[in-house]
Length: 544
Image 1 (cartoon, one colour):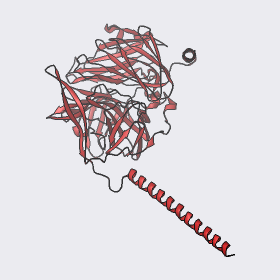
Image 2 (cartoon, rainbow, N blue to C red):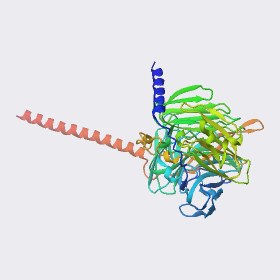
Image 3 (cartoon, rainbow, N blue to C red):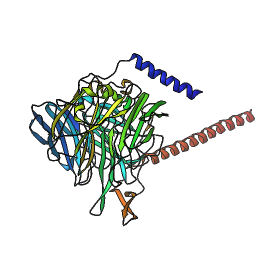
Image 4 (cartoon, rainbow, N blue to C red):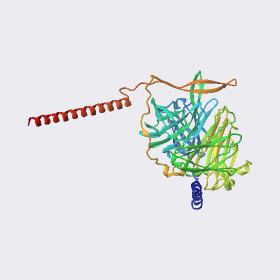
């Protein structure tokens, strides 16, 4: 009866909202900007780092790409074309460490920025948020798809003296080594970064549900890295990276993009306790479940299917698209809340690879006739549409081939639609959202913008002092002549210098023993004094 009343109450809330709340689409602008501070998660030495800059308008612009101490690129670009800026491989983050690896991108005109890491057979790309669209509170949404790698979190500081705290989830086993200390589930990691500094944390455990709170706005990246061989040594390379949305931009309505001939996993994460979540499939099937704070749940979709996700409290979701071949890495992209959809996007692709790009689109069913690519109505291109049924309205989804060059896709409406670029090049595949509505980016979940202080204990971990050398090893399996062979991989091997002086735990034990000895001494002294006075009084009484 309780579950029935709970579901009934949920649907009453949904009906009330749909009857009395005007649509939250206010597309007008997308998350483009003139200043970005970005970073690159760990990459193999053979990879190449690159920035793809797309001007918002067809005009001349000046672009400056720099680090804290050096100018990487400075020049004049031509609007209406893609600007590609190579970045030295030395700027990728390494290990679990604090470094100065941030990159600043400034432009005289509004741009859209994609950050790419390309390797010989793999790579990753993410859509960057400008500095005026980031915040100081985040919850990690990621995916750990293989035992052969690690979950990675990267933080990029915008300002000096930025205090950062990580709260590790308490609902599963987690182990992180940072600064020669071991952190477990429920622990907090604290660090202070200055501008242009980065902090990368990695673990063989899934870090989804980790809360991050900073004293000033920061950029947060999350992804997955795997081991690749390099002259007999296995090194880490990030193969899935997303820039996380601030927690206050989390939403309550999402839809997925259907992908043909491959399977899809949808991960949903809760930022608050008692998050009631409902998922509706294209067949009309309704699934209901509840999540607690930092909990997540994976839903497996059939090939070519999409779902509608709705919740009363704010949630976040990530779509993991499996590749056609078992040896290929899956693709990852953060799902945008529907209220962050924009009504205008720009995109540009290089002419050197004309057949590698596709555009995935999701638009309100009744408005697909209002969609234009440049000046051509999209409905006149002959593409096929699929319907995704939602609780509030239906969406039509489609895939179209992208012609080389610079393009603008718009919808003549105040409502928004979703657009995502698929790069299916020879160096791996990428999913890259084209943008979002920045006017409500930091106002979707105002109650989530200021997370309460963490309840975890601020400590420096369990300590790593048993050996002069610390080795972390995992089993890596690969197919060799149809037989599986185990390869031992060394993740980190470094000298651990024992801290000077006495370990804090040992010191606390010594202090406790000293206090106990002092207390016993005082008790004996008091007993002795009392005995002395008693005997003296007894002696005087006998004399009298």
